[in-house]
Length: 92
Image (cartoon, rainbow, N blue to C red; front, side):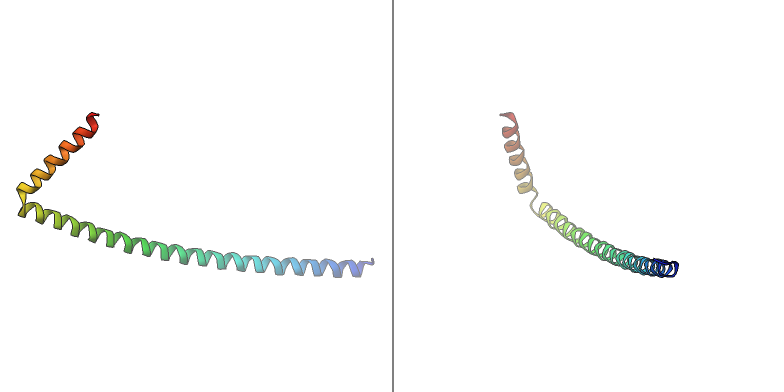
């Protein structure tokens, strides 16, 4: 090979490497953007789920509290019965 051919081949290799580097960089940038978008979506979904769970637990607590206020003797009896059952299970 002569020097002109070697320079031409080296230039083509350098151009191909530069093009591959640009494509890789664009791919990395695109992947980072998609990861960021996905993380943001997951974060928003988790916030909504946590808020929904909080509302459900608050509603359940309110329901139980209302029942205890309306039926205190039944509640005491149920708590006593549960205690007896747990005690008998642990005693064995």
